[in-house]
Image 1: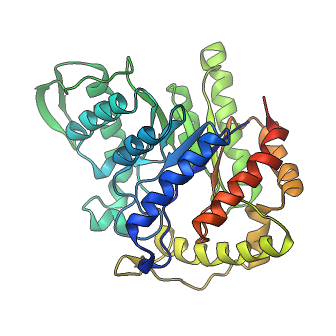
Image 2: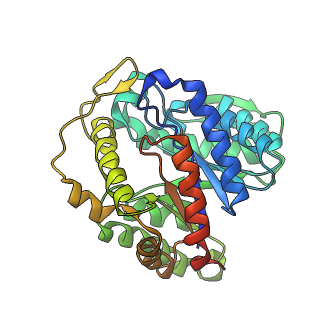
Length: 339
């Protein structure tokens, strides 16, 4: 099992400064490369202080300039928020500037507040995503593309420049449900998924959907990969573990506000909401553990065939604590899963 570090861009205290968060992301990308991580992932979200990155392709280029061999993955670019006629050219440029290290993860969006404010209601996101993906694939792989659909209507055009990676940059589909994973795998896409803070049965369903689709493809599906994102924090000791668990509970009180809740945001900062899930219940469904326990809990993911684990570890702790955590994880946990 390979490992990826999620550059999650959380700004719990606005006075810290957005520019410092970006600098921290770049520093952690360099640290991840030095420690042997396969890749880093970059979110796209707007108008809020969680997953705060409105320009994932720009960030991917910046990361590529600061590193040498990491895969740089968007997790994910939200297609319904973009015009594919412009976005396809931006993807091609990012593919060139990253020298082919860009992996374009795409999805339909998750936060209703964000989607509504930006003019793409989440109720329309499935239909807009499906057509956007079709248009994007054609623009990246064909010349003189013409399309007449529900969301796009244009005559022949060719995006320029053309991508460096042929026939197109590497792509992944982000989806959480069984049918979405199965359908995307059958189409030949790698998968990004997550159970968020859900119980273990959810991630098992997600992995099984990928396996079932690969089995249908036979040898044609052997190369397809699945990445799983989890909240993962390798704690120094039990006291540190408990402190980070409390931080995670506070993080989810804000995340839930925009993921399933009313989207109460003031000056770009998400307000915390009361949670029905207790800290102990949360503890059972996320991976905050000391190294030995972390190895035990990650073993099932490896055994079930997860190709790459995305560590989402930013709970609001200092960047120095994050660096220490990465060092600890690389030294004490990763060797147990070395290929």
